Length: 334
Image (cartoon, rainbow, N blue to C red; front, side, top):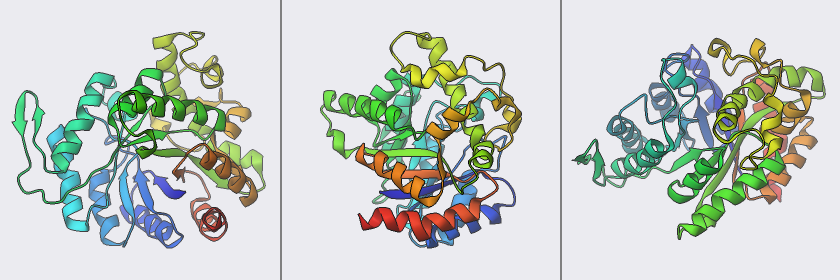
């Protein structure tokens, strides 16, 4: 199992770079950040600095979207970083939540997302693609490689990830839901004539190491609110009891009233009081190191290739270090 760390691009950027370097020293292979240009600093500028100051770390957004940048610009940015630092990027992509909504736009359609995945990957790897009806190619790309991993929750999105993406990002660490969604993605890949085992499965969720569960829950409750934005979209699209989406995912948002993106992805978010402890425990990875190892073993058994931990709480350094000294070695030894 690979490990990644997910950070926000809060200033100063040097702190993000420092945490990424720390993570690499502790055995993490991936460094991710949010991509929401209004709420945080521009990630691709920071990625260049991270790549310059690390040796092996693979970096990318969790997640970008097809609407805030034109596709040829996104592809060219990835291809430039890859040319400079040796194909050490990955493109996480989704419909867009905070990045689109805080700018007054709606999330992208699935059709647009699916088209963007193919176009961005083709352009970044030097192939010709059609952009707005015009053939486009980046003539300077040589030996470029850009895996594109799609974030998804709903049945149509899961099916699209299986059909067109190189990997699947699931932003929650609940074993029941992980099993259900990974199966949906792999079934869609098989139906499309692809090798379902060739898709990389990445589970991303907050991890907090410590014995004070009450404090850990309060530091990570924001995550249930963030996931709730996507769940609310699913409920509005499919209905609450449609059978299309497991009620284990949708039931907890019944008392959700509003969401202010000013607190997005931050501990103490006042709009996440509706998130019960049970959801925090299911969606996140909390407790002493042994509890983390146990849950990650269960996820690995379900086919998860990478656990990307959100370090957005008051114990970033300690969590990264404990993973490096206890959790990652324990999983690697097996």
